[in-house]
Image 1: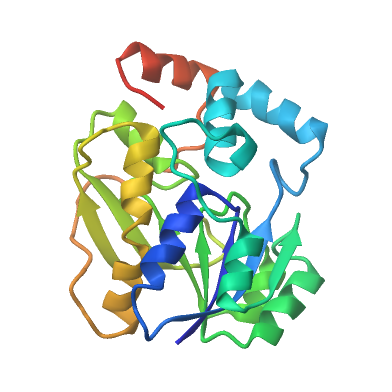
Image 2: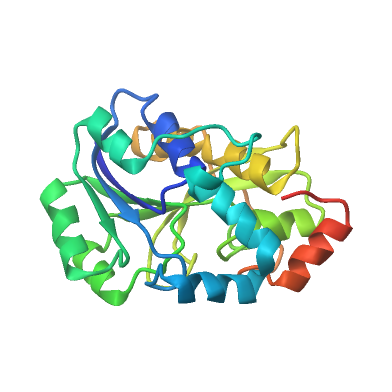
Length: 248
């Protein structure tokens, strides 16, 4: 099975790739590295928007998990997307826009059986789904549809959850609304934002193998709580998160 992986490069993407390659049936045929920080931009204005939205502490956390130059001692070293591409002998495309025509052409040339988005901080547009409808899937570090949104672990910790869910779902234009195909739950030893996310993304391969390789060992569990979308944390959310004794 050939997968084209679309992601913002990060320690979480690295963990997901390691877990996928634990299965010899899986081959990575292409990598799309989304370089955007906010929307489709990665200039100083994008960093300014991030700081205004989420504050310096959360921005620092994002830098520590996505930029090797800002990696903190407790964050393991990870391979860049270019290094991964070299070791996997597959092409890699850096882009600010995961839905741009050249990105779609690149994915098509990779001839994937499926497209997997992992830790992608950008919303795919209608053009993407017109081209790849029915073969695009997302790894979401939250219980769906309870924890929709870009950082479900942050909000789950803020709401004092003790167990956390990684979901594999069909990717459709409506955010985090596709059918859930597989899920697994972890109870992290260290319930920090970083460590919980890392523990979850390390289960990516398990979910893909469960659904696509016929392992069938990660069925979705019903949950009657109301669906809710939670956006990016604000600076106020972050200060409240820390005041309750939580750690990024």
